[in-house]
Image 1 (tube, rainbow over the protein chains, first blue to last red):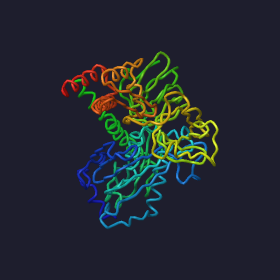
Image 2: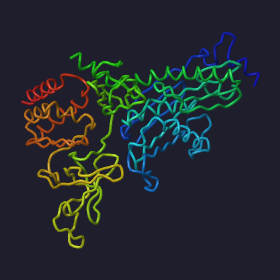
Image 3: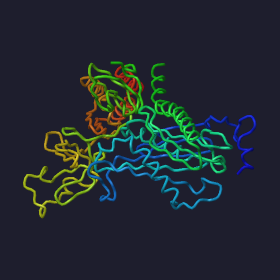
Image 4: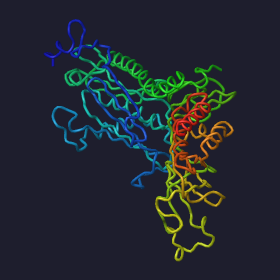
Amino acid sequence: MSQFAGKLIGENGIRIDGRKIDELRPIKLSVGVLSNADGSAYIEQGKNKILAAVYGPREVHPRHLALPDRALLRCRYHMAPFSVEERKSPAPSRRELELSKVIREALEPTIFLEQYPRTSIDLFVEVLQAHGGTRCAGVTVASLALADAGVPMRDLVVACASGKVGGKIVLDLNDIEDKEGEADVPVAFMPNLNAITLLQMDGLLTIEEFEKALEIAIEGCRRIYALQKETLKAKYVAIKEEVEEE
Amino acid sequence: MPIFYENKQLVTPGDLLAEGDYSTGSNTHKEGNKIYASRLGLVDYMEREISVVALDAFYFPSVGDLVIGKIAEVNINGWTVDIDAPYSAALQASDVLNRFKPQRDDLSKIFDVGDLILAKITTFDRSRDPLLTVRDPGLGKISRGQIVKVTPTKIPRVIGRKGSMITMLKNETGCRIIVGQNGLILVDGEKPEDERLAIMAIHKIEEEAHTSGLTDRVTGMIRREKGGAK
């Protein structure tokens, strides 16, 4: 690993993709991209490309899964066979099942599930191109799709990772940094309620390093959150401006 | 008691709307004494209550609502009706027929799968699916006209203050317009041209629901279109 350390972050503090250590990858967000879904959103974060679709609240099929006191949130995280360099089998892998659960649990606290008993909210996160940090981008885009579907939420959920690469704590790891770096800390965060809904750590960090990593991850979340809000409002602001011009 | 936005400003889920002793209206929630938005919409500050007029939402049934539904299934003693809500509704045969006998009456002759009906919700709560009735005058099968779908939260805009918008639409286009609370609107006119005009106007209202001075703009549009057609 040490042979990579020199290359991952250069002398001038520039990372392999040309970013500074506290810089996010360029993010592009849009909502309402799928007309068949009740709500949908799309994110490009660096080389990641992810689609999210939300259906519901709707009747639960199969029926016996319905909960009498709240809605059932189901989530499927899936990577397209062409999303990575070597073809990935389209069958859900262990990792994908785990990420489905992680994304679901990151979003569950924000939704008023108890308002819609006996229904299900089905969430699909489809990774079209993966380049590190797809679980975080998945949470970010899924929460936009939920808002687009009109599902009442306590707050938007936004996720961002930080980690340790080449001995430095850096923000928003890409695929290479994730694989070759020392540690990875994905965080999902509700900015207004100031609450964390997902926190994982892979690798080794000292307590001080972890605290630093968490701090910059949350800072990254806040920056992405601003983009999320802007994206949700964009459609309506455009119409309003158009009308006022007339 | 501070408020953090201007009236009618666009807010997103989780935005802190106000702090203090307010009560929560639609699409808002309270944590301690802070009021947050729970949907994307326009904030509405009233004397004591704060609410958000949602721009993206689905229909949630409520007792007394007039809805337009589609027959999804014909059962032994009633129908299952799709009302474009998280729950499918039921219509009982005994509601339509006075003396209903399952052996004798063929329910598909009354309403068949795919038929559209105008109905009212009589009962609904957390534990049971909505129950419909078609007993009131004017309710029952829809046999003519066209259906337009709009976001349910924009229905109040289609109706307008004290019905100003809907009255204008009816007068200008000469169509019979029935608004279902679930976001489906029946437009029934003498000529297809009138219906087309009314539908166009409804789509415009939906798209620009969050802007002001809408009634005048829609009136202008209809008059222009009518002038152009002649």
